[in-house]
Image (cartoon, rainbow, N blue to C red; front, side, top):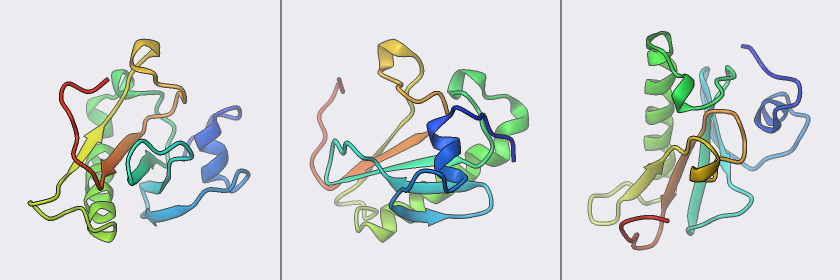
Length: 119
């Protein structure tokens, strides 16, 4: 899997920076956000470095599907997968969206009622 030497999430994948892992598979790693915005706030990242959703190509379809499947497992593990509770999946791209780590990641948020529009 490709990594970038100065990428925070690549360092978590390499075990150089600790994280509270919730789930993983051959394509993804899911861990708790260090600044949670909801009772459940888990990040799902691909093991291969992709900068953000704007950089995704058709070749990344398997990785994106794996990210969604991992998010589904996380929601089930966290008790927020049922239709009466629910959860939110978010990908941020760029500075205006407050994307602070340039490594594709999917936020799994839940455990409280969400408002719309976000932000």
